[in-house]
Amino acid sequence: MTPNEPPVRRRLPAAERRKLILDAALDVFAAGGYQETTLDEVADRAGVSKALIYEHFSSKRDLYKEILETWVGELLGRILAAATAAGERSEDRLVAGLDGFLAFVEERRDAWRLLIRHRASDDVSETWERLFAEVARIIGAMMAAEMPRSSLPAGISFELVLDATSRQLMGSVTAIANWWDEHPEVPREQVLAMVMEFAWVGLERAASGEQWDPDH
Image 1: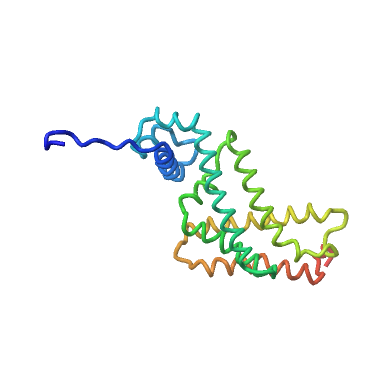
Image 2: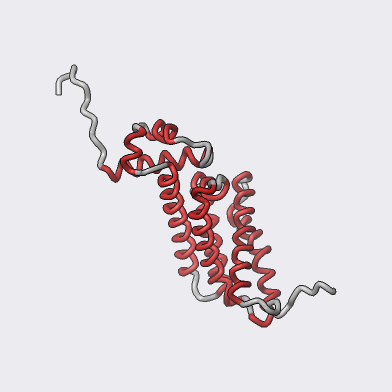
């Protein structure tokens, strides 16, 4: 190539172009939310044409759903890997799983804002709810051994109570994680301690047979 010739641009492989689009979309969606973000903004951030995005994704909804699937997949992987490595004790597994959850929030703050803080509109809410239910199911499996059937309210199946309790815990954890996103100066171990004070102390009291008495 002579000095006067323009540099030859290397055409990225399809997989690299797709990743470039996904990375740019994460930034834009996390900043503005699903409804407010346009594919033109994603294209500008990625430095590609809008037409190229349509070569990989059929719509904004399709692009957003893939991002959800990708990041929730990583979140689930972190929770499962941490819990599995923690051993057999339920408390250790729950602590490790929740710490894996918080590690994701700490290290992937843009992804967290996309997943939770900027919840999507109705056309992708079904995907979001399915993924949230899967995380709750995994948390519930770690809690099951510490929920004796003898302490459950009468007339309700164990499976329903476990599902409700795990979703309740997930709701509290996501609320604390949102608070932590606004107060990143708080160390992760202190946030984990707050979660366990709320969750584990209550489970231990239930495991000992203690129940709430509305007439007390």
